[in-house]
Image (cartoon, rainbow, N blue to C red; front, side):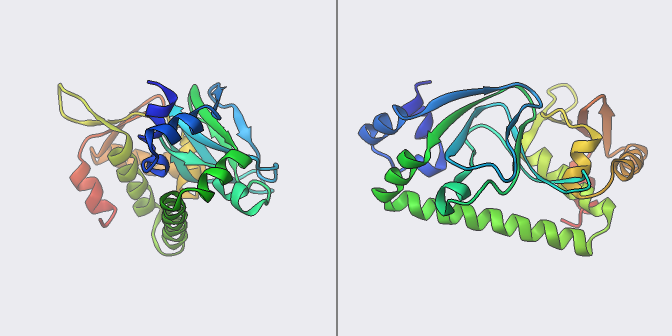
Length: 229
């Protein structure tokens, strides 16, 4: 797929004309990441917007004690890094490839020029930032008021709905991401040991099965009830 065709499939750039898409696509640079490779760290200078062409990228909030929280996992046609471009401040989080990934990179000058001439894109940015803020609020609310069991169930439901792949043989859902227990722990905001314990409970209840870093959802409806959804 040509870069300009790919851009028109990204929510932020859907309002572009064919001519504008071609002009903006000419400014894009390709960036390849290996699994586990860090794209940028919290505190780095932010001069580039990134769009996921393939693969997946984990946004990580690190702590001084070595613990971390994962507020978002981004996949094909998601974009990130826009906050530093808009306010000129350093990066607010780490970005790490969860698997081999291909990105498009757009520098700050071209990005701001694009926004200046596209009112619909500005509305999309505001909508997207608002959505991310709401998700952060939801994560904080979950940490404050929900049990670990409920929080993990909610994360697994969210992953199943966004990354689930149905097995044609038994119609179960496979989460199409290789997630370690450390990854899950950072998404829920708990220790790896807590995740290990909760996954064991879910396996005993025949709600999920795990093999290596792959997770299979055996009963999504019962998992939703556990998540109080």
